[in-house]
Length: 312
Image (tube, rainbow, N blue to C red; front, top):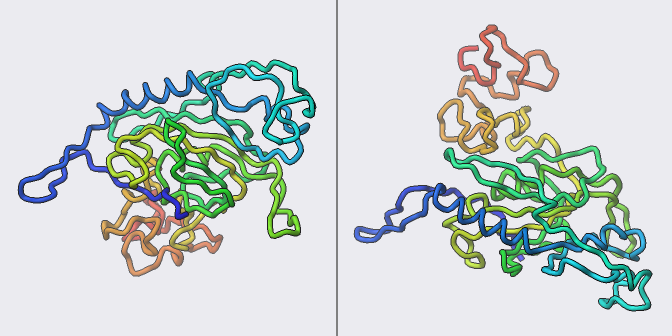
């Protein structure tokens, strides 16, 4: 199944379809509180299988899959993974009181067009690897996407490489909150590989950080979304145009939206432009001191690095 995580550009204005028809797009300022109320309702009435994560070492072949439920209290846990909690399990009597998701999530505020949107991140396992992907890095991960009715619209059971710069905003802003695996890949000898101590979590995003008014057919208009995540590997400092400047540093205004950074106004965003200032010298060749980093070379001392300075 092809990924649905492509990036969607949203216009806040009416879009003219023909001479007599226009499509009204709800402003962010109106939709944001509606989405946030729906997300908080879900988070306050749903729980995840934290009893299994707490006892992961006692559950053979535990897959670290997050499962959502409206059950706040469970008895025991399915340690032998047969789908039934009974006397065959390590513990079939202990009562476990789950915490609501609302009490466990972290809130990350993302501003778009001066409207603040709450992104809720459930950090189950932070990940013990040294790497933490940036918002635009290439990342190897598993994920599952669903709506607030828990209907799955996208599911990557096998790990896949994703360019976070090309995913919806809420996804990239969430994956970048986790560290990668400490160990792996370990070859299991059957065509599969195992990773150890990787980042595991979930994100609950308003529609403005997802597909908003331009969703794929499997997703409704203005739909808040949920993604569960397993973050395995990352290429930290991904350089999309191979110009020597990591793409995250080409986000000059710091808004995590690479497409609106275009120094030479040639309609090529800096992160895809091999010559950011449109002078006779390519960005990669403006590394005057030869340290592999064009960002610290400023020949004329004007405070603007050569690769962004057309008269350097």
